[in-house]
Image (cartoon, rainbow, N blue to C red; front, side, top):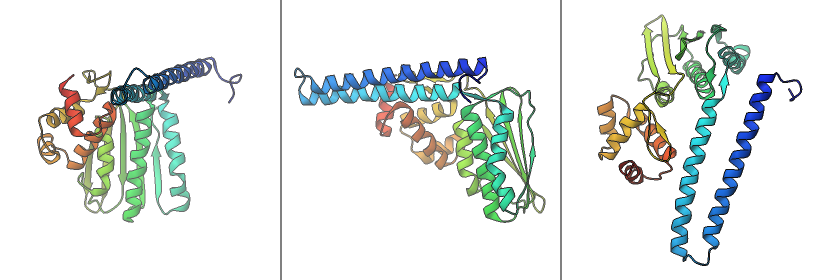
Length: 275
């Protein structure tokens, strides 16, 4: 689809996207010029120049990641279109495998999904079904999406042995993905009748998410983890206090380090305490 064939709404989105890309390119060029000016300056010794360059680069990296997160959240996918992409992703399993997949379409009037939520929803379904296929005990799977205006609701039910639990290793990466989005995951299984995985993912970030440093915002769970990290708690202790797994704690700590541009827990703690 070229610009002439696009609808007015689509053309407006393309213009906004072009403007955003141009603004970001100008900002990155300015930041690189600033770095070069610091490193080339004859009035600054090597040690001071290195320290100033690191500080400038770290601040630029935080701004870049924040802008990327905001841009990702600003892109929306119609819920029906996002579900159609999921069906396309899973078509090879139906066509070339022994698994029968039943799709229950979401309502066409459902609220559009932020791209991060749509992408996560598809990944959760794909990973869950791949785990069922690897187990080899499921022949039919029912996949349903719904949207209540506030959340994406994902339901996956199989006809397998019915021994799946929320602590199953195959669900660990899925649970971490859901937790990173402040969602909820539950598993209901009946021996001999199959298992059901239910996921709820909020479409909007928490209203009380608060900035930490340089405009970076943290989810409620990230705030909980950060509070305990700054108190000197280790991952196992954090997991016990928050009722989550150690692997999920590691996931949140890694995400915190990435968000603020820190490389160690000590640096993360220092940034948090200086907020």
